[in-house]
Image (tube, rainbow, N blue to C red):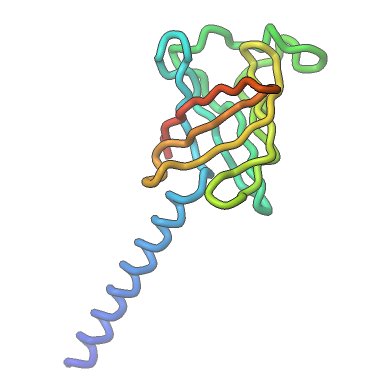
Amino acid sequence: MKKIALINGLGVLCSLLFFTTAQAADSQSPAGQWRTIDDQSGKPKSIVEITESNGVLTGKIVELLEGAKEKTCSKCEGALKDQPLVGMKILWDLKKEGDEWTGGKIFNPADGGTYASKAKLNADGKILEVTGKWMFFSKQQQWQRVK
């Protein structure tokens, strides 16, 4: 009887250890859904889903929120002109370097521009600091983890 209780106890302990480790690993990856905030109004604007494949991050808009002013990319040029924002890829080619994801690009539908980009998770994995850079100018946003 004691052996069965010991085996059950070890099983529960292993399950808890696995769950805790998996949860910690998830909080250290930017993969998931993130709420973006409008710079002018301070209101939630969209949900961006970031995926990781072969160590490279890609992000696309999956939902527009009430703070979103436009539903299509009126400032875009070429094939993206007037295309729906939902489904649009806005982040790509970010690779892990130390505690940041760097070397990528971010597309801003508000001005139709593409910028060098990097991203960094805060310590608890709930905020993603996303930076776009053009020449000497940079702009940072804090995206909030949704899932």
